[in-house]
Image 1 (cartoon, rainbow, N blue to C red):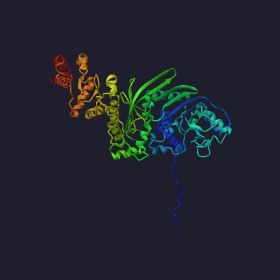
Image 2 (cartoon, rainbow, N blue to C red):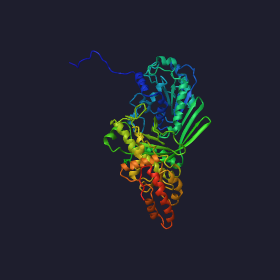
Image 3 (cartoon, helix red, strand yellow):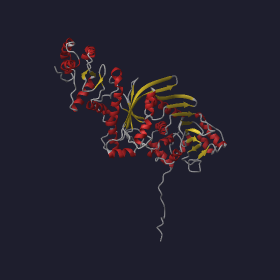
Image 4 (spheres, rainbow, N blue to C red):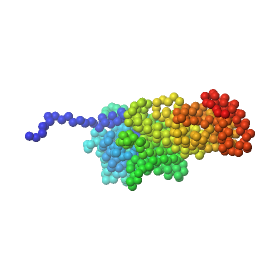
Length: 557
């Protein structure tokens, strides 16, 4: 006898439209432009162009009469890399993209492209000699919902009429297209009424606003942590709405900037010649240019990248690598302007303000819609929370300190303490709100020479610390004349330093007659400075004692 024969079969399956609807419910519609930018960066494109084509194309015949509804206004997104066979194949496996197994790409979920279904029921892709017309509703296609045409072999009038809708991107369709153009026909009102993905019309006004919002994001540093994309252009029809670009400030900066992708691949995708990857630290200056209409801006940032090989926890490393989370962080410090509030980035900007004076990038554990960090603000001990704790307390702190070291030759003349973490005396529970404590602790423990004086940056053990006030205002020039390594701090920072040093059992060397006398003996001819010493001792004994007594610190004679 053979095996039993089932009487009925209830195979589990899910229509493609249901899966796409669930993706759109997980990704906010505002993420679409950002996800396409991330895809271009993963494809190693250096340029991306968004074009909102407001026109309607009435040419006929078409491949199918139902496609006339897709010949109205559309958003076209072009980058200067081709769509490979692997990319086409990847589209057929929603949620199981090849990106999952590609350490060199930073996209984690393989679903970003499908966020464009917020605005369309059928995107098109043109690249090389292929034109792909997606039809998830199976309204007109008969061969699986993704018919692809060879535009070089098939020169039919139907194909040519469809290619006319790409003309705003200036691609030459008479030959192989050495680029990728994604066309997103805007969902019409009639399509919205019957759509099983998103039952809402997409309008020209909506897309225009999204393009303006992207411009604001880019203007605030949205391209700083991309590995390849260096130029973004946005047009409405043939009119440039805005354009942005990033470039190294010097040739050396450009070379350092261009070395980041190779360093990332060597570190996390394996070194081809068998060498053991070592930790990477790179700093360079980047100019961000932005033009919108008749206005333009050009800002300079100091970028400090830090890549580490391991978290030091095997279980955490295994968990993170499966999710393509690596110990790569970067700090972007503005040099010619001040940020209203620094933000968190994971390659692209997250909707999280930190209150710090710099932007912070890291491959953090974040929720799929990129709205928040995993277990953000909670005391959860899940792996995502542990990873983020490691990233902030170890990696971000290390990168921040290396940024301060890279800037130390100018900091004492230009920056002073404006690029240091913002003081947060209350701490909100969010990981970034503790960075002031983490960085100060490390600077004290490692005795790092980044404390600003009037003539140099010194280590914690070498400086004399005093709160800003009467003494520094009246006698600062005398201290500078003898090159006293005096570190003058605002009162909140001075109090914070006293507190953190006490917790580490370290003594803060406050300015006093005793320490001043020791300094003069060790560094100068005492006879030459005896008059100055006597005067300063009198002042310090009176003025500094009054000043420090208000702050709860003792002054030695």
